Length: 143
Image (cartoon, rainbow, N blue to C red; front, side, top):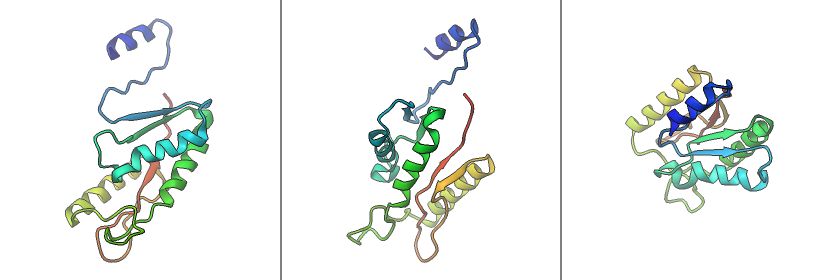
């Protein structure tokens, strides 16, 4: 199907972006009900700590709504209470091991090196344990 779309776009020079992988994209257009779309997008990625096969790990936002959506989802990320899993007010616990912590931090560094910016989180928390501030980061690509 993707090949058909690209082929159809060649005759009139349309810009096309295809999401053909299993990264569960979410799309928000400028005419969306942003009061519903923003918490929905935040829930899509942060639900179950982002550890589900349908986590909304990619978010495409129409340029006119981009800043508002990024700030809204970042605000949700900043309000997630990270802490030990046995504490009643904890919403997101630690990573499973030092190895996983290093892997996550390495991916964050790769993203930053490629131009991504953190709107919230994106670094190891100081102190004991394998805690990372829940990152919400973005890149702005013209498509």
